[in-house]
Image (tube, rainbow, N blue to C red):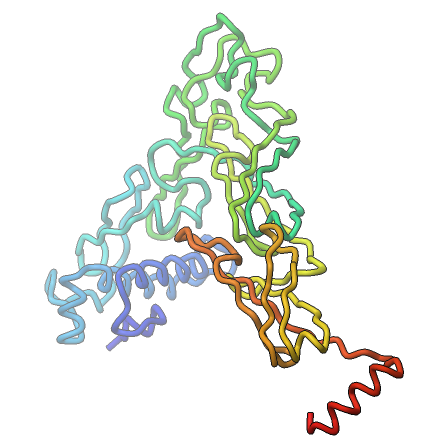
Length: 362
């Protein structure tokens, strides 16, 4: 008996989505119309998919090792009938005359190109990306930027219709207003009917009677556009902001997306650890022994820091709520590392005082 799970490279716990993805991938690789395709392997894959994609047949196969629908089950593998892509969901006669349903548009669309099934496809504009450099403070609190970019955009003269002002839209003669063109191909198991986007109207089904002089009927044109980018607080170096629909426009279709990559400059005084900010505070030896107060600059302004007596080198002082803003509305902390500065030279009087401290056992 054939092991349908092994044929598709799956385990018995595979989900319906796993089965569909595995079949799509292997069908594209072994399809006879592809270079290096394998007709026998493709039939075997189709047989396995027809059983495992059907809940009832799969349950029978898991229990008995075969299916009983249509008599002897799917394992005997009779010939194929014809495929027709005019509908996304339909069956074909195969495997002992059983009617096998595939989501043809989804599974075979990539093999034959285009949108595979019936209905109008739609072009999509190209995604574009830009880079923005931020100061460390801007990355913490967020900022707004306006960037001028050159891209394909909707024609501002005809508002994307492609028609000259006062001109009407007429039915596309290439596709007779359907928006796509059907093509039939002969294969070893029948005819495949696929559909592709009409090159004349780009899927719209209509064209301008008199084209716009600016975009020449395309509805899109190359021009500069100012983009307003809102950078939220708390971003990190290398993060990407996706702006849907702000990429390049497409004739008769939707616009692509704009991706903004953020580059954060390093700061001489501050670094980041998660939602906390880190900085260093150099203090005098005497303040380490006796304590003291220091006024420091933070990203929020000046703060007074109290250094307790007896603090040791490398110890930290935490100021709560002065770190990185979080998604929940709170903020991390500012963590200050204490660096005790030891004098490199001592005056005679200072040396005498230290000698007295040594005599005291300090």
